[in-house]
Image 1 (cartoon, helix red, strand yellow):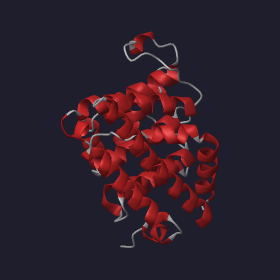
Image 2 (image 1 turned 135 degrees about the horizontal axis):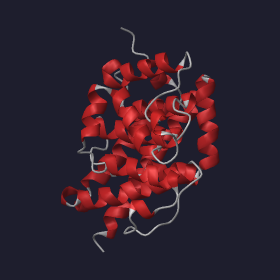
Image 3 (image 1 turned 135 degrees about the vertical axis):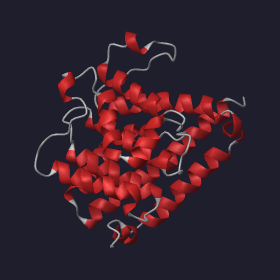
Length: 250
């Protein structure tokens, strides 16, 4: 069968950006603080990812680490934090579900992200538009062995496709970024979830949204721009992971 993502590796800058992302995350995992104390750094990475992802969807606050989720008045941040905590450290049942049945994992992510924002009957249920179901099924096939593309590219494609589809109508951005993180964990690219690419996307929000529109347009240039930006965010997120790890050695 033809690999649907193989042509993407021929686009300008994509292969190099993918390699650089992988190398950067590898360095982060080899940091001495992350060899044994990765649960601590993973927890901080999860918090930072939730804050940044929520800001991109119009929510989020700079909250103290000890504030209980039940006391948070911002439903966008609360949802993003629940999602991040569900993925924290990489050793979760959700990773296994993603590897076996990604659409079930996707539904679970939406239930966590949108629990305070929509009626319970809508949680985890994609829109019934004619193109949503087939495109989600196609995406599920790709992430469960349907491509030999490197993990950074799979993560970027899944992220971009979910932003494009907006399958749930609420919390789609938080879910899409969580899926990108889930792919990096499940593929072993970032097995402990130490990277924080969400911070890079938040800091370059205008570029992020423009590149996402380019991916949705489907032109080679637009797709290449999105893939390269996504890989660069993984690399920047790895630098964020090193900053977190360095803080434990000071």
